[in-house]
Amino acid sequence: MKILNLLHLTIAQMFYRWALREIDPLHPDVPRILLKQKELADRARHIGIA
Picture 1: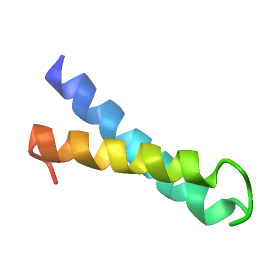
Picture 2: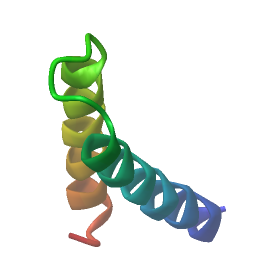
Picture 3: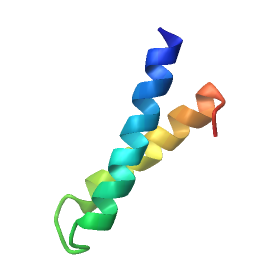
Picture 4: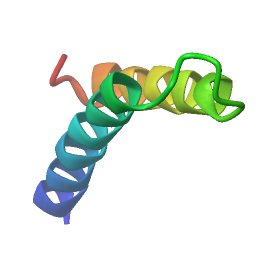
């Protein structure tokens, strides 16, 4: 189960990095994407992979 969490976390981080590159900076979802990226980074730090 831990490997699945690690895989999900890694793929989610890649997706949100890609989304930020592709989305217009004035799009209303940018703050939500930045918040989600921060949550994923905190989770990765908690797990110990970052």
